[in-house]
Image 1 (cartoon, rainbow, N blue to C red):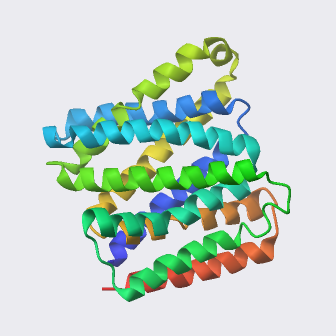
Image 2: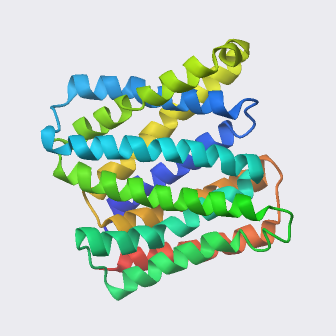
Length: 279
């Protein structure tokens, strides 16, 4: 995995953590998710107007990814209702690299070298260090199950989009149509919760939309990186977003425990180094 690809994915990871921190305090999470989806649609329109069509062969992938993302939004909402961001987020992101690595090996035929597999497992281990004692700390088992369900969904849409963007005649065109398809989420959320939408403060609406734009940029970078390196490697490096989120929580929100989060950062860094050295 080249240094350029690693830097692209690390940038995506930081943006993902940052927009999660920005919208963390949203008063109405469902409406905010609608604005996040809207933040994908507008850049998507720009992309399809500038870049060539990805071709008809990718239509099933775009449809499948859209359906999977509906499940993602729904389960993520449920998980955050049952548990804290600092607990749910590490579970959802920590399990997905291993699932993606397994899925890519059996579905796409990607075989990773031993050092890369070691790096993927180390990254996941470092992420899960943050979740030590989650049930004992008061988080419900239902919340844990919901978070694990989100991890499965993340792995599912990552595999679908990873295959779709490689099949596309133009990667940016694929990303554009993928984002436009989220208009279905926007219309459903806003049409079924119109009164709540009208009661949302303008600042909250703008934060949600800005979060969506950042989220779109982050995922677009990841999809582009998928054309440059194996899905499992990209996914593992991407999960450094959990460490970025932990550091933001420590420095911005004064969250703890600090020692465990710093330990997790060191472990994840070791995993990324292993992935970067793998050939």
